[in-house]
Length: 66
Image 1 (cartoon, rainbow, N blue to C red):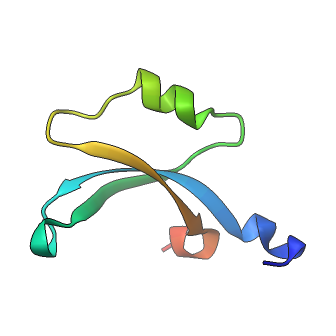
Image 2: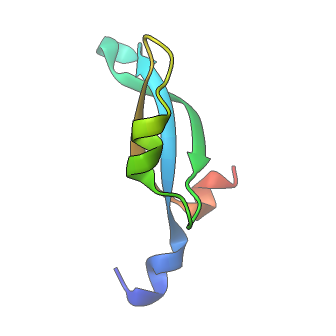
């Protein structure tokens, strides 16, 4: 990665559940985490409903616009 590529990526909060091919995890809801948000605090204070889980993923910003 080049330093100028830094702004092309975003940390995303993804909520999903098992259910894809072979029981693979599938993200159902994705949102970009804001610069002032604290991911570990989000994870501690906000729990998904039973049967759902959350994970954080790095995504290209250009893919988020789709």
